[in-house]
Image 1 (tube, rainbow, N blue to C red):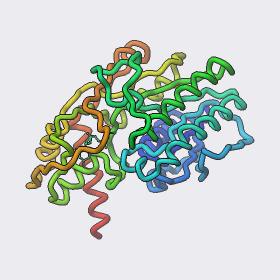
Image 2 (image 1 turned 120 degrees about the vertical axis):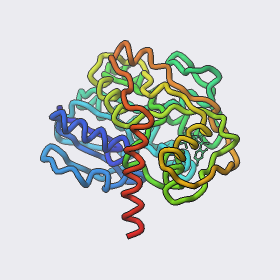
Image 3 (image 1 turned 180 degrees about the vertical axis):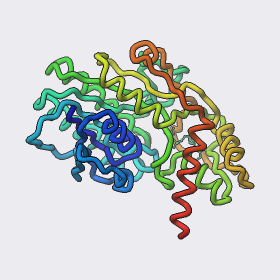
Image 4 (image 1 turned 120 degrees about the horizontal axis):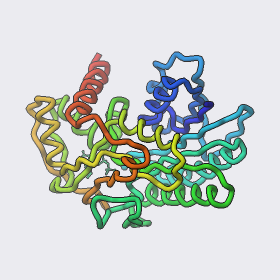
Length: 313
Ligand code: UDP
C-alpha cells in the first residue's frame, strides 16, 4: 500500500512509519515539526520512505496515488497544547478536514487518531466507546478535546455523506522511546527527574489514575484497526490502571534513584480517572496489549539514559 502518515515525525507517528515499512508498505511522512522531530525518522534508510515538511492545516495536493491515510498530526501533550492552543484547534479541525478531502479525492481509507480526552474528566470507569464524555469546552484542555471531538464528527460525516472509508482510534496514554524529555507528560517528567536525581513532581495528591500503554502495542492496535472494516470509534490502550502516586513509586523503584516525591498543584481540569474498556478491540481486532509496564518502562528508561548522556557530552 502507499500510505500517508501525518505527524509521521512525532512519537507515535515515527513508530508507525517503522511498522508500516517493516510490513512492506510505501510511506510518505508529512510533518511540520511543530512538536515532531527529524531525529525520530533519521534512522530510516529505506527507498520506500519519503518525508515532506508540510502543515496539514493547509491543503496538501499530491500527484501520486494514496491507499491509506493515518492522520496523527497534532500536539498531544497538555503542555504543548496549552502553548499552542490555536494550532491545536486548527490541526484537529482544518487539518482533519484537509486530510479527509484528500482521502475522498484519492479514494483512500482514512484513519483518525482521536484520544481518550474526548471523554474529558470521565464520570464512568472504565470508559467504553459508548460514553459521550464530560468535557469542559472552554477550559485549558478544551482546545485539544474539542478539536478531536470535531475531528471525530467530521470523520463520521465524510463516512456517512461521502462514503469515505474511515476508522477512528481513541488513543489512551501511550509511552516509550522517542517521547520528548521535556514534553511535560508524566512518563518523561518522572524518568528525567529520577535519572537527574531530582525530586519527582506529583501533581495534586497523586490519587488521579492513568493506564499506560507501551508504544509497540499501541501501533499494532492502530494498524489492525486500519485493516479492519470497523468504522465506529475504538479504544486502544492498556486497561491496567494505577494512581499517579503508585506510578511515581514504580519509577523510583525501577531507576533505583535516591530522588524523593514532592507534591505540586494539580492542573485545571486534570481528569481524575482514566482507563479504557477494550472489549471491542479484543473482539473486533483480536488485539490486546502484551508489554508489561515493567518491561516497557525498562526500555523507556534506557532510551532516556541515552538522551541524557548525549546532552551531557
Ligand atoms: N503529572 C504529574 N506530574 C508531572 C506530570 C504529570 O503528577 O510531572 C500527572 C498529571 O497531572 C496527570 C497525569 O500525571 O494527572 C498524566 O499527565 P500527562 O500530562 O502525562 O497526560 P494526561 O493523561 O493528563 O493527558
